[in-house]
Image 1 (tube, rainbow, N blue to C red):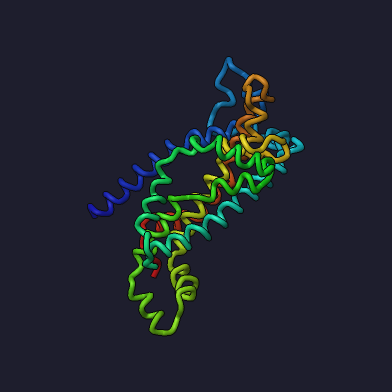
Image 2: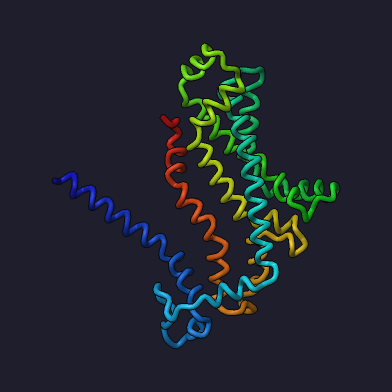
Length: 278
């Protein structure tokens, strides 16, 4: 009885904490669903509650009516999906090689990869910009994807996960006549689905929310990502077309990644636990 009571106390406390943390997001969503005329009233608190009243989709309709907004969404989807797919390929292969394949200089390679975590990305912006300018690749998807493919955290995550898988699994596969590639694709990758899903979500979130490099690399409006595009229409708060539209742009930019995390959250928890699936 006491254990059950402690359980519900814990659940209640976590629920209250989760609600408090989500209040800013709920407030942003509520304001995006209210008319700007209501939000503009400063003499009363009308329009600033968590429940949107009166309810309207006008802010989202006006935002989507902008000619480049659908294109900005498409750009973000292409960049985030492309970066995620290639990063998964590179991180899984590199992580497996470092965890399972003995070769000369493996320790040095691992140290260099960890060193990449210590280099601030802003330090290499000027060389990156100059290099892609010389290749005439700015304002292309290639320029926005390639610089983000080197993800030391992804290699480290996959290496740690592959190390956690018992060596007996590989030894049994070798006895059955499986080669290195067959072991990797048919055994190790299926076992590492939680870690792969976690890395995919982290990479997708990073690519979707990235602002600085797309801002530097994409000078044409049609090549903006959603973060840069929405930022360009609200650079000056005084020039925005109402607080509701400003909040609608925030909801529109964050909704896909929130939905993605909710759908795959169980894989994220299992991947962070760093244990192989059974």
